[in-house]
Amino acid sequence: MTKACKVFDQFLYSCIAIKRQELNGCNKSSGDDLLSSMMMMGEEKGKMVHDDKFLRDATFNLFAAARDTITSVLT
Image (cartoon, rainbow, N blue to C red; front, side):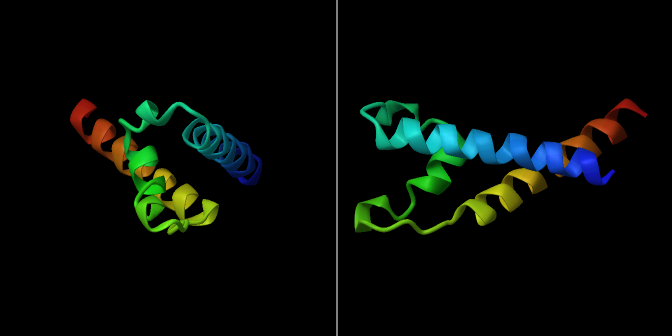
C-alpha cells in the first residue's frame, strides 16, 4: 500500500506542476477545472494562496470521494 501511495503522490504532484506551468504560461484559458480554480484564487492579489501539499490533499480527497460514490452505485 505504501508504494501505491507514493506512486499516486507522484502522479498528483506532476499534475499540479504541469497545471502550474500552464497557468504561468500564456495559456490562461486552461482554467476551466477545479484545480486551476483553486490555484488562481489568490492570483488577483499577486500571491499564491494554496501550496502544493494543500492542492494534493484536496485532489486526493476528491479521488477518494468519487471512488466511494462509484462503489456504492455499482453495488
